[in-house]
Length: 167
Image (cartoon, rainbow, N blue to C red):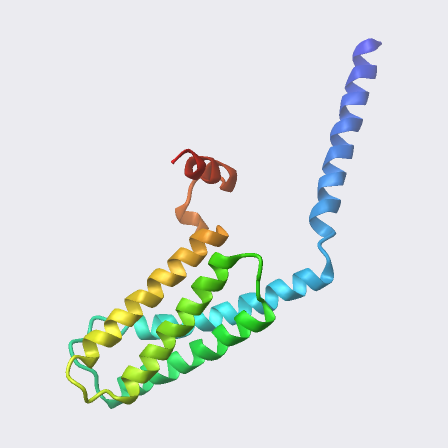
């Protein structure tokens, strides 16, 4: 008799806990969900332009079309960075703001180098700023705890945070 009552009570508690968790995951405010999707679209544009420029980083010389691609990608990254800094600003998070400014500055340097590409050493300068852009993206993702390829990280986020706090 007591076993049935305890089992029924236990079953009821488990069902209630599952229902509460389901409600929590569904009850994300619509504005926040929309903002995250817009932010994801903007960041995917940055990623697309960054990957286009990064693909050229192994070249020893650039032709006219490669310089054009670098210039266009840099300009696109600048536009998105300005939009991120104005619409998705985080004034309380100075590191985020600093990294966004670095991203914008690196993209501006890429555009400047691409416009004046006849200068000696301009290929190396462009490659340097592509690497600087990559470092900035990496630092920002680490700061915001964003994993682009979560399948590479076997542990759970909480475990990863614990490991970082121990170091």
